[in-house]
Every structure is written in structure tokens, then in C-alpha cells.
Image 1 (cartoon, rainbow, N blue to C red):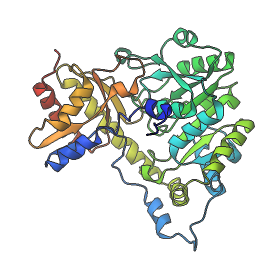
Image 2 (cartoon, rainbow, N blue to C red; image 1 turned 90 degrees about the horizontal axis):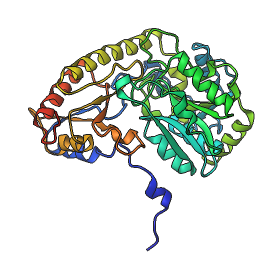
Image 3 (cartoon, rainbow, N blue to C red; image 1 turned 135 degrees about the vertical axis):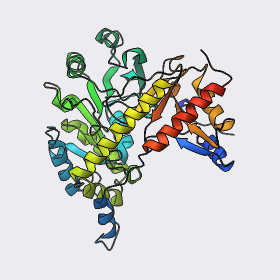
Length: 399
């Protein structure tokens, strides 16, 4: 028998999705499962998106240009201007979701054996995309005890080697909800400039910043404009994860030419998704504000309820719609499995993502979970009651 690839063996299973079979089993037993494991918004997609789908004026659903429709890229350029992100239409390449943007960025910028420094916990798929590119993620741990703020610069500097090609940040952060300050962003800028690195900046959650301070993009940092590779997606801000439309934005012409080779190899981004995404950019201010306010209320409710549970702690996330919480358990992976396999309270249980899957450093995050507050407030409140009951019953509880 032939054997599968080493790359395939090293590819990590998703901490977000790998417990899905257990959740399906619980539902088949008649248990209601509160899905807190994945960033799948439950809020409605903008009506403009559905109107565009209903009125498609095409006889053929054709290939689009490999970098996406010009009209979509022009509207994205105007969208970024709302955030004082000044880019040209040609700087924007439309991708099959933000995931493909990360993968193509790594494939175009990194050779096998190259290294990227990433603060952890970090979005788990970064590791998968790095393995696909033959590159290595080198992590700098942040701590729940100080709210997951940026680790000291000295920690980064100690990890920089001749193989280091870039620093990757997610701002606002998935999974922690942390929002980097201007001081922290300037520290990152200085490292990138000093060591001639790429700055990969995943800014998918820019619409969800809860501090009241101006949003800081990597493109706002002077002196490294051509070293920035910005990752974006319409999935979260317009509640349309299934259309699979993202973007890679860079001012580096040579890098764009290289990325385009990968774009051409996969032919084109989704035609229908681009039509929906272009229409969604016209979503009203009222729609965007209602979405924002709903997440603020959910965040406040969730954090208040978690921190009322004996032995639990979560810092207050300042962006996105996730938090990482510490639980009084011996092993959060086992706890999350137990909740789906063995536990129910009044016919209900909870589905969370073990946070260990967002860490690369062995032993970190073992008592933590990522919770996505993508359920309506009454559902969130009920889920936290079920979590409290689960922790009271769990055999591996640690006090």
C-alpha cells in the first residue's frame, strides 16, 4: 500500500470542527446543542445580497478574471477608504475566502523551511497553511492573565533567525478578541522594518472593535507600506461565510505578480460569491450598526455570565466575537468531548472549541476554551447555565 504524505500527517485537525461528529451524535440522541465552537454568525445577511442573487442578469455563469471582477475590486477600494486605508484597485486580489488569501500569501512569500513569528493563541488554520507551504510557524505565547496583550518585543527578537520571513498578526484577534494598541502596532512595525520582514495582517474583524478608539490597520503604519500583506474577508462583517469571498491586498508589485500565478492556477474566485459580496458593500449604516450593537450586547452578557461561574475567568475581548476562557478542568479537550458524549442538562449541552488547538507550544491552553458569541442573547444565557451545570458535574473538575 502507498503511504500518505508527511505533510498530510503533520496537518493538524481543526480544533473548531473536529468534535462535530460528537455534536451530531448528541443531536441524534435528541439533545439540544448550543454551538459556541465556530464563528458562524446567526445574524441575517444584508438584503442587498439577496436582491443581487434574485436579479442576476446573465445567460452564462462564466469564469471571472483570476484576480476577481474589476467592479468588486473598485468597490472594495472605496470600502477601505472608509477606514483610511489607501490602496489602489490593482493592489487588491479577490480570493476564495480569507483562508485562500493566507495560503496564497504564504505560498508566494515563503520557501520551505522559512519561518513566520505569530503571537499565540492564534487561528488554528495558520498552522495548516504554513504546513501546506512547507514553512514553519514560530510562536510567542501571550497570557490570559494580562488579557492576551502583545508579548514583549524582546520575546520576538529572540526568535528572529536568518530563516525568519515575516510576522503574522490577527487584529482584532481570533481566538482571543484582543485588539492591538497603536503602541503595540508601532513596535511590530519597527521589528518588520529593522529586520526586513513581511507583515501579514489578518484584519477580517475590523468592523468589530469595541474600544471606541480608531481602528489601526497595518496599512496605517508608516515606512513599511510595501511590506504589508493584508488579509480580508466579507464572511463576518456581512454574515455570509458561505459565499467564500476574501481578498489579499499588497502594494508590492512583484508579490502581486507571484500571487497571481497561484490565482491563475485555481482559475477564478466564485462568480456568485463575488456578485453577492459586491452588493453587500452597499449594506446600510443601520444594518452595520445593528450588527455591531448586537455583538457588544452579546459580549457583555457572555463575559458577565462566564465570570460568575466559580473557577472560570475570561478577560473582556475588545474586538471580533470570540473569547478565550479559563475553566476549572483538568483537560479542556476531554471536557468538551465529555459535554457532547456524556453530559446533558434538561436535554441540553454545549459545544466549545478546546483552546489547546490554538496553541503550538505543548502544554498551553489545556484548561481553556474558545467561545464564539454567535448565538442570540437568550440562547447565550441558557448556554452559560448549561456550562455551569456541566462544570459542577464534570469528574475532572479542578478547584
